[in-house]
Image (cartoon, rainbow, N blue to C red; front, side):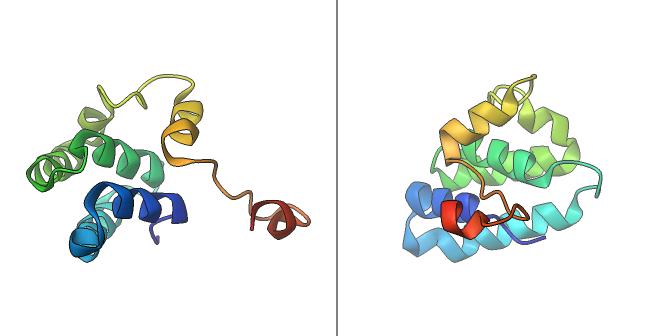
Length: 107
């Protein structure tokens, strides 16, 4: 799975162009290590929220997510019901692919 556009945008905002490639690589590797039945964007977003633009904090959050992805959800605001609204508030709305005319409204 690729990183979603809103995750990529947040990486650029929080880390800047100089660290973008390294951060994207770490988060892509994290997503590949996760079980296919979990919401990978949710876990990736929680990891970024914990990092708050700090590379050392990102390394710790990635390790927490690898050890037990539920740990990284705690304290991120994405751990309870309604996490989708928080994700949209922090990262912007997700593109609604698959709906007729989605590009017209979300593209």
